[in-house]
Length: 306
Image (cartoon, rainbow, N blue to C red):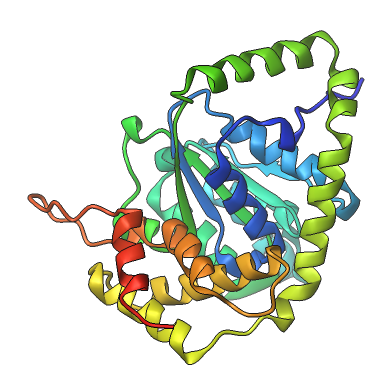
């Protein structure tokens, strides 16, 4: 019997997490999303619900267990077979299964660093390449990487964090009415999943259509020189190293514009993109109070005329 999944649009709050996931569906070139937060904050529920929402694309969620070895992740080459027959024999791994799907890694901070490196390389290139004993093999690995983690269990190295396109921090609801609504909806879903899902069909269809429209519109979105200068100023003002952050902000802003059904990037798109693309890339030193704030971004944006 098919397991019923909680509807994406029925998730209470967690707007930034939902936005970051949707943006990566619209534009798989954003570099994935890392969701950081305590247990029980709908992280895995949101990922699976989004895949269910997009079942028309035959998109699945492929799980990568933290115990996975490198061979299990990238696949293996049968060297003996290649030597004997001159033919390459490839045993596919998780990255091959993840092609055109969502690759979901829960507790990604507990994975070995070199495996995280492999995931991020494949996500960036859209190709998985392996080489053994001078024999190489490559295959398509165009997946959307979604990692989740509880920061209390340790963090990723800054070099790895920087390579995630977007990072979102999530927490349990602190407003009484929202917490009440979380419980009410969950109980209602458990009592009668079919009826509950039916109640959300209209909103699910609406967001699905909006995502499809945005995917089509994305190639038409443009940005001005002023917007590029604004992105550069944000990076410089907040002490961000390198240029990956700038690229991430502008690509994310373009995707947000498409989602808003607009063909040109506006200041608000830059602000919303920066909130997702900047904080994990800010320079952190042991005694630094260099904290990210939306107000800091707003001040930078407001300091530029127009």
